[in-house]
Structure formats: structure tokens, C-alpha cells
Amino acid sequence: MSLPPLVEPASELSVDEVRRYSRHLIIPDVAMDGQKRLKNAKVLCVGAGGLGSPALMYLAAAGVGTIGIAEFDTVDESNLQRQIIHGQSDIGRPKAESAAESIREINPYVNVVIHNTVLDNDNVFEVFEPYDLIIDGTDNFATRYMVNDAAVLSGKPYVWGSIYRFDGQASVFWADHGPCYRCLYPEPPPPGMVPSCAEGGVLGVLCASIGSIQVTEAIKLLTGTGDPLVGSLMVYDALEMTYRKIKVRKDPNCAVCGPNATVKELIDYEDFCGSVSDEAAEAVVGSTITPRELEAWIKEGRDIDLIDVREPAEYEIVRIPGSRLIPKGDIVSGVALSDLPTERQAVFYCKAGVRSAEALAAAKAAGLKNAVHVQGGVLGWINQVDPSLPSY
Image 1: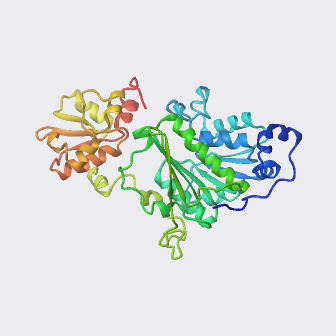
Image 2: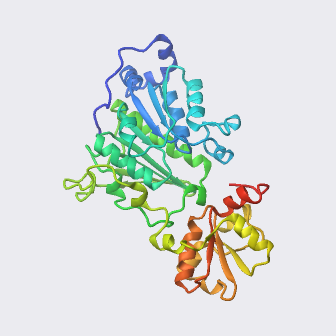
Image 3: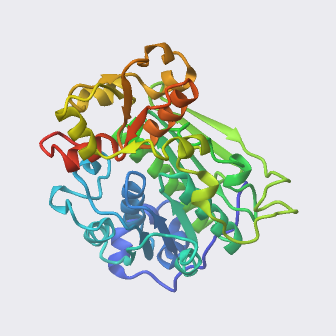
């Protein structure tokens, strides 16, 4: 459905701005009025990572007058495969500062506002308040639900995107005119069920595909052009090169935007989403060792069976010496329970400790009462024991 423009037009464009945006100005559906609205717009991008990188760059190129960046992380070398707003010389810098510098290079007429902080219940409304529209480039469920609820409670539209391996999704959530994120996903998936990009990977260029859709939708909302994805979910499969548009209806029983909403204020989103299941949280109590403890066990010749529960592609990148691979999914499903040791002590590890906790819970339920897992996983081993190994 078409919607009225989200912002009023600025009073004028300078001669230099007319030259810069001339290819927009000659599009009848944008023209001078639309470009003035972009100049007057204030857009906040939550995250300056995979989705935030192309989104921020194209917001700047399009002439959005004020661009906010909410990002607390620093640039890591593993980011550069997809986070194109950062470069080699930015490694170790705050992402918000690196992104702001790139934006100013793209368009000096843009006002950049840096929010170099973790968005949380205490500051999210204050950060959101000056902006007309939010672009969600987050990569974890707790922040996604918080962004949704804060946007609904503050009456702001936001453009959402999600990426994983070769698949992407995008939509516009605006409770005043259609569904919100909770209408599509009322509950988060069970902990450990959906791998993050850090666990499962993402095709770098997929970020550009979904990020550019997000900016397209933002421009349409700001200028009142076309039919935005309110009430629709765009699903992209890069391997098949297909786009599907799925209708999403407003949920009358939605906890945050429905007529009988129960969420009237922000909640504990970490608890709502959970990093690990209750079974895993219970299993790790008294059954967790540090990488240095594992090192000591290996040196003293302790009779252990060191089991890597990551995926085969991760195992090829780096592994703790002496380990063998049994993916977590095979353990949790029961397929590989017969491969677990009965005489030796099982020691599980993964990338950072979440998947190994889930594997530990399944193993204990199957009778391996003395099994343990390694806190911090292979990354902890690299940081504490052998920094010569590659990290990812």
C-alpha cells in the first residue's frame, strides 16, 4: 500500500546539491520535492556491520540529511569480507567512527551522529527519539525484539533485514499501518536452534543485496514513493536467484501491537530470547572447564575424548589438537549418541561455548554424567593457550 511521505521537505537544495543529486531530480517520482524530503530526513541505522555497511553508504549517497549510527563494536579482520564500509586500516577502530568517516567521504553534506554505545532498555528510547525512521541491521534476536518493541512503543517505522549463508529477508514494520516483527515471529526460536552468521557464515555480497533493499524501502517511506513492504516479507535465495514476496498480516493477538497488548514497556530481552536452553544452563553447572584446564588435562595424559561439536567446514579452519568431530545437531537429535564414549570422559567444545553446552545437556540426558564442556570453546583455546592458531 502507498503511504504519505514520512517527512516534510527541506526549504531548498544548494547549487552543489542539485548537481550531486541530479539523477534523482530527473526521476518524476522523486524530483525536487522528494530530494528535499531526503535532505530533511533523520535515519538511524542500528549496526554498522554486514547490513549496516551498504545501508549507511547508500543512505549517504542518496542525500539523507542526518544519519545516526548505533554501534559499539570494533572492526575485526573477519568483518572485512562483507562489511564494506570498513577497510584494512580500520581494524581495531570503533565501527561507528570508521563508518562515520566513510560516510563523510561519500557525502560531505550529510550530518553524521555517532552513538558508540550498546543499545539497551535504558537508552533505546532516547537514541530513537530524534529520528524519523530506523533501519535494523542487528544480528541477534534479543536486540531485534528490543528494536521492534521500542519502535512500536515510540510509534516509529523501521526497516528490518536478516541474512544467513545464501538467504536473506527484508520487510517494513510499522504498527500504525501494518504488522510488527512480533506479528511475524511472536516468539524467538529455541536457543541454539538458529545459528548466527558467526557460526553458520554468510555470503558477503548477500549483505549488499538485502542492505540495498532496506535503503530502497527507507527512501520510499521518506518520500512517499511507491508501495513499501509494509505487510509483506521479501525472501531472497541467492543460490536460486529468486525473490518471493509473502503477505504478513497484523496479528490481533500480538503481545506488543495488538488491541490487547500485554507488552506495555520494554522487557528483559536476554531472558526472553535466552542464549542457551534451560537444560544446557543446568548441565554446565559444575561441568565446565577452562581452556587452560583442558591444556593441563592433555599434558598430564588424562583419559579424555575431546569432541568438537561444530560443523565440518569450521573444523577444517581450526581445531584443538587431538579432537574429533561430531556435530552438535547429530548429538542433540540422537543420531550420534552411540558414538559418544562410555569408558572415557567426554569433553565437548565448539566455537565459543554455546553449542557445546547444548551438546553437553544431550549427553548428560543420555547417561554421560561425567561429561564436561570447554568454556569459550576453540576461541578461548586460541586466546589462552595457542594464539598461533587462526581465529574466525
